[in-house]
Image (cartoon, rainbow, N blue to C red; front, side, top):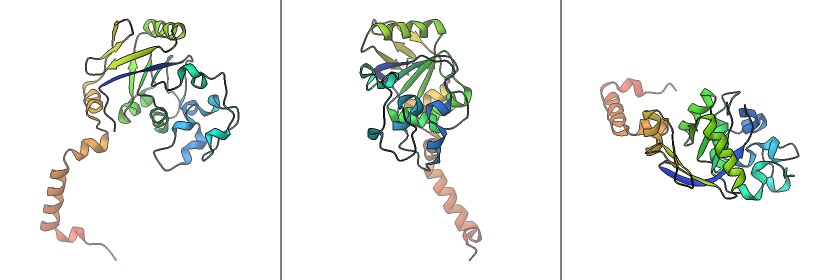
Length: 215
């Protein structure tokens, strides 16, 4: 998993409450058994005017010019600001996969759905909860200033605005530790790889019958 320490990026606004995971990555794209390739279908039903199916070439589809991520000023955005209850609906882990694979590193909203919030941390995304009034202000500033960027400093737990103002945010210490070090659940386990190998070697040596296969 990619580490998250300090990130500066262009901000895109998702000005909708209750954006659910089916909107983030529609159900037809969940058929894939891979954990990659979901970025082109992020917000698929809003980004395109035609219905998308797995395996389609995005270049052959009809983009919706009114959708925020299709607007040239937000090309390459890596920080998404959203409204309340972002990521509600089903618990599909594909939603943070799609956001991360599109290029987003941080999400900012007044609130997130609980399971989605947890899944973000496990997949290298930083979801940040800020007071609604501060998020409202960010929406206003993004609208007023093309090219509006923010810096997210996870170590200091600050969102830094272009004028130098810092917006503090809370993050659970264990989640912070994992993001700073790039540890997902597998990475956390592999920190103890030597002990695991030693245990397995001892187990085979002392109880060799446990290693036998039934033919």
